[in-house]
Length: 124
Image (cartoon, rainbow, N blue to C red):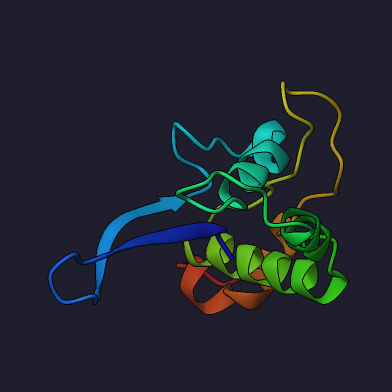
């Protein structure tokens, strides 16, 4: 899930809605990472008045602690890594600090699940 906002304005002639702008976290004006919370808060305002939509930012941010969503994200990341033969990849703290998770897709798991494709010679 990528948090975003779609802005529309009223058409002066027919009163309908006209697309104005699409914004999403992860762009230059709404950076991700350490600035994620601030970027979410910037999106959670009324576009014309700039008035904060009370409680919306906290609701979005707290949903990112959803354990089942985080598990789904990790499963999808592992599938992505496997499909691209990216083995032995670990999560690290920003700036190259200590590992915060063991390898997401250990080398041994990759070879076990892809034995026929990986081995061009007899594998044990």
